[in-house]
Image 1 (cartoon, helix red, strand yellow):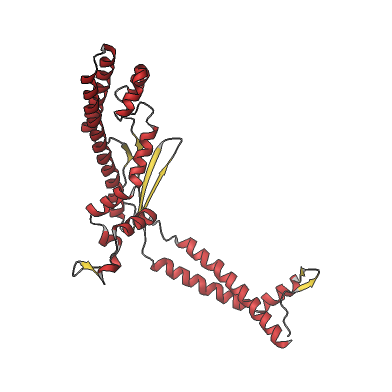
Image 2 (image 1 turned 180 degrees about the vertical axis):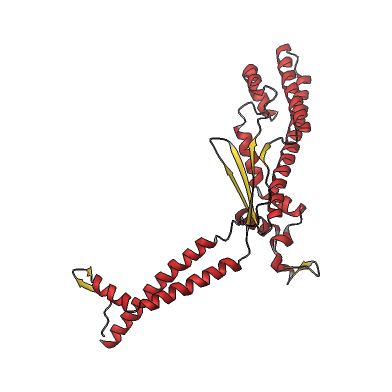
Length: 297
């Protein structure tokens, strides 16, 4: 039987009947391709190492406990002095952005990886457990910069809901207990970092304000500066006594259920295998039939 491939039937139209006849005549090729790819992708889904997801939900803390907003409106002409002293008299929205920027920063992430000795865990294929050293030449050893890129793109995900102001920190890893531990440790470390920065900032501001206080003799100005110093003392005290200084934990990360796998998604992989197999079978049949027609002609 002479087989025909879908070809222009005239004026650029496709001969649908010939296309259907061609595909039906070699339908078992298509079925075989679908089965082959489905089995291959299914085996891949069951052989791949499962990846678990741990999520901790936090909310940004408003540390404007000293009435800095009202103080800023009352100071008036001393707004420039407050800016020079490093005092933010505006809203706390910028503080939340700064906190998230620190969390995503390379310096903070590399410090977390280094202090928790995560390099061998992130690159297990390149680490020799017996000799406790990297495999290969020193030039081929993974670096902290590579660890940051891998951790930031494949392991950690940070998202923020602008409506509720809730922030989620997700960790995806092969060990479900480690995933939960890392998510909680990241938040705790970030709070410690922001506390230390706040203490350092308020200390420097107070030194500057005390210097300005000693240099001025105007009563109103001295009173305003004293109020600024008092606000900074309150801010430093708050940083010293508050553990959840920048982010307050709403829902701590817990190890997920062993059956609750984030990756791979087995049904999706199997369905993808069926689709790819169908496309591969159809394209293969049409290509073979076209070559056969050219050979006969």
